[in-house]
Image (cartoon, rainbow, N blue to C red; front, top):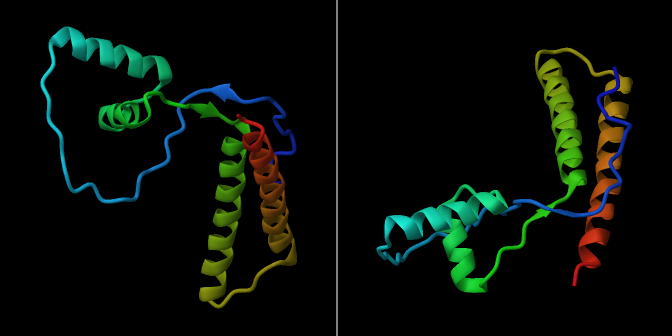
Length: 132
């Protein structure tokens, strides 16, 4: 069974939410009050760009004045390839830890998925470099 999807999406960038998790610890807070109407307006604007985290949305708007949301179909495909490869690696590791053996076909499948991912990431980086 082939774990990799051969059909690749070669489509341009579209607008959709892509927020990278902020790993910096937040140590200070700013609190403010607003009317119900203002809150609904913020929620509507968040919904338009597909954002669910109000704190992240407000922080981004206050700091940058805008949000940039990209939908890159290749990212979803990369995620599938990585999940497939990691599942295969986990299955192989469990079998080896139980005293079993690995099969060359399994390793070839993992390698194939990882190589496909490398190509997709190259395509993504190329598309991102064209954004001005």
